Length: 471
Ligand code: GAP
Image (cartoon, rainbow, N blue to C red; front, side):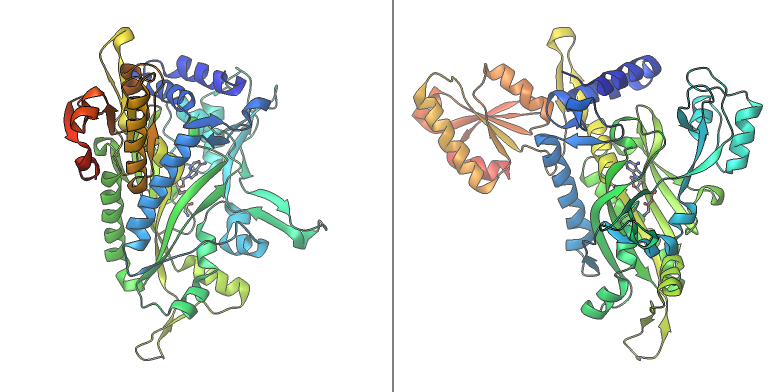
């Protein structure tokens, strides 16, 4: 049963986006829920807006995406080190980084209902281009165009709203115990810059990579997991000499593109946007956004920023600790490195991957829905079926084959529910690349049927060759 929030969400999508992009977001949300990928957070209590829970297949997909990212961006490189910093940090980190003062979104309130909205979203929904607009300009534009709230009421003045979740650490709640749930994983890397330099003795250029949760009290979470209040980021802070920033920027841009292809994103839907100065974060001298054609519009998928020496300089100033790198060649030259930051959201990756993979074939009741997921990230790599559930000799043989595969490929599923056709449909919907059926011939000649998800083609393969075939 869908929760109230999910129903409302699907209904809203139905009404407002019926004519956009074959309405595929509604289908994706439905599939994600039905097949155990993504559920509304706190569903049995009616949900908690902006939070999502990943079910058995969702967590497998997410883990595969994170493992693939870690492999490409950290493990396969000599110049990148891993890190797992605490989510809660000293509040001084966020004062130094500029988040306490400036990590805000433009908020506007319906004067009748008190409901709050993002001023830029209301203008965008009215077809107005808001790029480069300051908060004052957004406020003026709302008045000038007579924009009303979605309930048709007057809106108040536009003001800033800090998106950090504030909390207190320990039993005493005073100014010193204030902390924030981190809004980006990046600062955990900057505050550990010296620790990594002192322990690993890296030569420039080098990077520190981290995957972890980030939290933003978004005014208007929307578009499924695209804009949530709790999400995950995969970030690299890559430290370079100032004069070399451009070549590292290009190198990371290419690495990001290569990885997007590897995980099977539809590259026809990926676009680069050179973010104009007025829209860049306070720390950035150049930012490229990778945008993706989601069914709800072309939106930011990832960011690649040149953060200069902004963060390390600010932490040096506020902490009184040196953030300088000493050239190991001469032990004399000291400087604060500059930073290139590829920043990728896990949840937006999941959404882009599902949007790229979703496919339909046939019509009406005969429609076959399948996810053309890259095998590397598919939650289940292979499913094994006995042709009939009530034939113990087939079930025993299927179990034997299943166990043999499981030793080498743990993401394998055994399924004996319903008929084979229905099992194929179920596996297609969750993106399982191959299905193996054990039938009476298997008992005679030790061969099985291997069926391909995308083409539906079947071939007989010797049991002894299955692993090689799958790999
Ligand atoms: N450290 C840089 C940084 O945090 P950002 O553009 O604010 O930059 C980076 O965020 C990425 O994090 C985005 O490109 C997106 O993939 C993801 N992201 C940001 N806010 C999000 C949200 N509310 N829900 C889901 N993902 C989000």
